[in-house]
Length: 378
Ligand code: F6P
Image: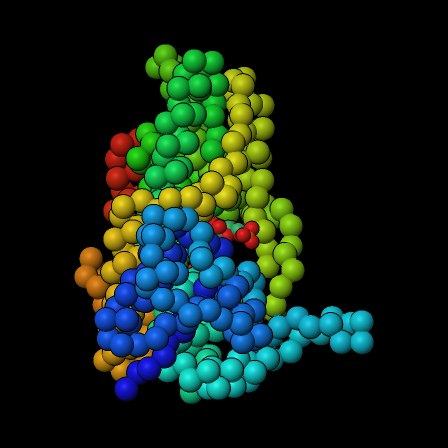
């Protein structure tokens, strides 16, 4: 019999987090289960800092709100957590403290809202006897074993809106407008927004680009009387034989991605300006893609994921991730998501033992993009 459940968020925020919290809390209350939220993710779990999530006051009126009412931890890996001892930085496994806290609090199931590295920690907690259920959150859409993560649809809509705006100014001034979008090592946001926003070129991390091909595409457009072009570039895109552009290294636990990507759009814009004679400008869309109101699609998906997660807990199905498989709500073992059971085409994403869902070259989206003449830099 479940009595208490906890929710924890780790990693960058994604539109729809509050909708998941609301759905879990509502489903829990209807089954006489108390719901708690750990403040600032794994940091809150370590400090045993939590709030009661009650439906009347706390989780009411949050469905449409961006961010997360209980915060999130960034780069926190409690299995390898940075602490200062005698003035020195050392990394320690503090997971036992978290396990103790969960046991003392009487949390019968912990819901982990996060991407790849969060679900890896969730899997590791399950190996220490904690009941966990993951919910796939990230604007990047790169979690293995699910069709889609919540937050992705909103990010694509924001990027598409940006492309619409860049189009009109590109056309007016006969310029090349480059848009750098997020997505880490996966090109989902780039590819979908390029199709939705009518871009001429889309450069993804999965296809190292050949600048000659991009220049050819832009010159062909010029010949056809189109003196402007719109180019979408993934933050993780890089030229053939070149390397990914890194902006900074972030502080954090070991075993999590600590590289901050950025700069790929500027590189592409500069190169295009040099080689086409047209003025080229880059816009880096950044955190606009993560903040603000979730789309209706993300609200629905988040609500489905949240309610399903609580249903799974009621059925005693733990150590799984809620997923959408061929459009149907389902669940898969966390081991399949983050373990060595790698999906074909998945690549190492910087976390140990991680799977990452990247765009496969035979994906329908790639075919569609090529069919309608979007240059993918190859
Ligand atoms: O994973 C989500 C994401 O927004 C990526 O698209 C981006 O590379 C990264 O997070 C940015 O992370 P941070 O919030 O640490 O700057």
